[in-house]
Amino acid sequence: MTGTIPPDSHTAPFMEQWLAELGHVAGHIGGADFHTRLLSVFSRLIPHQSSWIIAYAPGVLPHVLHTEDVESTAFSDYRNHFRTFDPFWHLWRSQARQPVASLSTLDKAVKPYEYTSIFQKNCGFSDELAIILPILSNTCIMLFLQQTDRPFTQKEINRARLVQPLFYGLHQSHINQTLQAWSRTTPHTEAQAANRPDSEGALVLDRHRNHLHANAAWRTAEARHGAPFRRALHRLLRSTDGLIPGHSPTILEENGFTLSLQALPEDCPLAPAGYLLTLTPGTTQAPLSALPGLHVTRREQDLLELLLQGRNTGEIAQTLGISKGTVKNHRQRLYRKVGVTTERGLLSRLQALRQQ
Image (cartoon, rainbow, N blue to C red; front, top):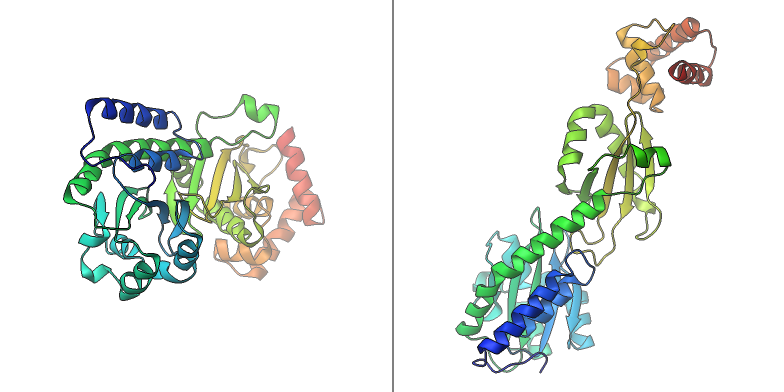
């Protein structure tokens, strides 16, 4: 029996040792093994035979992050056949938010027959006790203990409820520190490092590219850059299919900001198999209307900005609400104004003017 202690042996010396262990877990906030350490401390409180950590996120099946003393057949059966019927998943999706839940006391409405009469019977466990740790945007992690020979007692359930606020506070600190670490991307050049802002933007997406979390710097940049920012984000997200966790991110540089997109691994608690977008503010360039010797209308300036962003004729027409023929006419007039005959010559001329 892993981590087992007699139910009534929570003496003062034991609790002092247990609190010291919890403090040691706090020292691992932000680390990859934080939740497994938290599970270990939970396991010390209540007799059990096995334990799990499972992540729940919108639109995806539950994902097992860690197990202790779980038979390989039980693990594979859950992953391959029965996680669809996970009653705790159904409880979470029903918006019945609570800090602690046990299988034996769950409402029958969220306990599928396939789970309790097939999976539970095949695996030979009597009850499950979960501490529920919400993350963000309807995602959560649950720490589970399994009991084989009897249901968890009300005293044990109350004990889990008593410590859940402590666990949740540490868990939230871990989530916040993880998000802050994700926001601190590595500068590409010494100049960027010298001018680097205190905070950079970060956006977490689930595997279906639904927004889970955006920090304040991301929201500020989104409001400041407006439509060009949203279009750049849309273009970057088209490249998610080729991303592999742990490999180099996809980079998109725009006028005023740089976006970086990377894949998250399956065992990422915040967004299993999701994505992380980070934003680095760029140097602010002078508006086209302020460039020496360039006399353009407001419409021509809008078109030039889109050309500098690499937009094609169709994208420019759609953005400005004009026809492709009108875009081509504007482009020809700009060629004559600047004294060039090609788009490449036009863009080279603009870059030269900006460097004067």
